[in-house]
Structures are given as C-alpha cells and as structure tokens.
Amino acid sequence: MKNFDYFYILFAAVNILVSVLVSALSAHFMTERSFVITQAITMQQLHSLMIIIYIVTGLKKIFEKKLYIFPMLLAFGILFFCLNIYMVYFFQINFFSVLTPLGGSCFILGWVFFIVSIFLNFKKKK
Image (cartoon, rainbow, N blue to C red; front, side, top):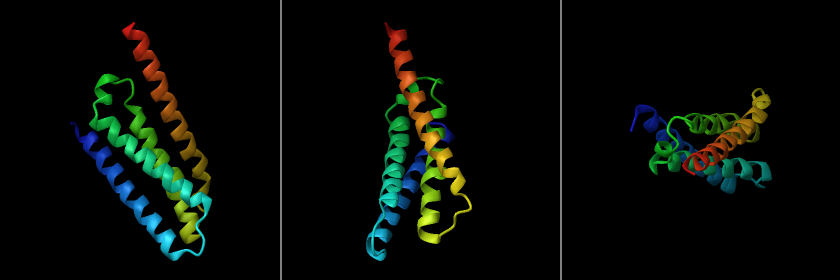
C-alpha cells in the first residue's frame, strides 16, 4: 500500500469514530434528534466505509489509475457535507454552510465516477 492509501484508511477510520461520537452525543444530550443530523451521520459512515472497502479489497487495483479521484471526492464530501452540518447543529456556526451543497456534489460525482469506471472496465473486458 502507498502512503495515500494509509492516509485514506486513517481518514475513514477517524470519520467513523467521529460519526459514532456524534451519534452518541446527539442521542444522549439532545432533547430531539434531527433528521438532518441522522442523515449526516449515515452519509459519513457510508462513505467512510466505502473508502476503506475501495482500498482494502483491491478495487483500486482493478480500476488501475482511472478511479484515483474516487476516495478523494468521498473525503471532500465528508468534510464539506457532514462536518458542516455538525457545525450548524451543535455550535450554530453557519459560516461554512455554503460548502454543504459542494459536499453533496462531491458525493454524487464520486459515485458517478465509480459507476462509469465499472461500465468502462466491463466494456473493456468484453
């Protein structure tokens, strides 16, 4: 594994830890749990797990260098989407909330790249 692979795995593991902590905090200390915070936690966990799966299972080797941007887009999506929602929800800091749609766009683009790469790889095998 390369250094970036270790970075992405560490990034994903830390984000899963953060999502569990946020989930516990919101469950125990908030009077009502918002649908928005639940969605942010789910998105953070899903995309962090996908980063780990992508690197550990060898999907990265299957797609060669075509899909190097996939974990990067998911990481930016986590930072811009999930963490901004947490800032607004827990600290009422709206300064970075304009980046939330950019985070959602990173998620969407990452999955589009992934699907297109699967299609192109399948087409190449035929």
